Image (cartoon, rainbow, N blue to C red; front, side, top):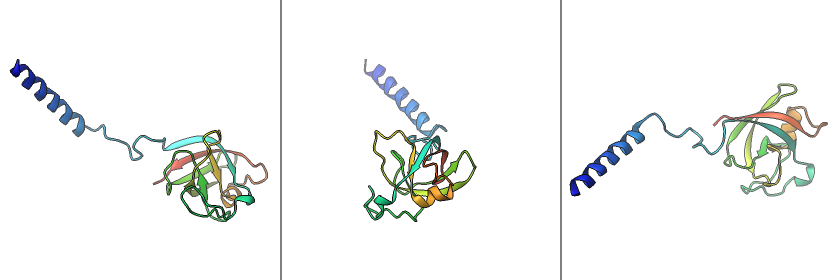
Length: 130
């Protein structure tokens, strides 16, 4: 019976070593989120100017920042307005309410650069760039 246990342990060790050394490592984002996402973006109103964000920074409507439910703070993403193909790079510095169905809330400056201030909402693509 001891030989059977030894053989089983050896096989398990070899399988584990093979799995760890194979080309199936984690992606750059550890599988926690997709590198490209599509959805609806809105932007923060002026009333949030100066309020603390979830990472402790103060919201600045003139900065290029965004709110996302899952992306880590500091992540930089390229946001592209699918209607006009304009894009901007923003930094995640806040968390979205889980009940919110939008993909992003952008700073006012980012929304202006994407040309959707008047509409208030835009269909966007985001791509993680770091």
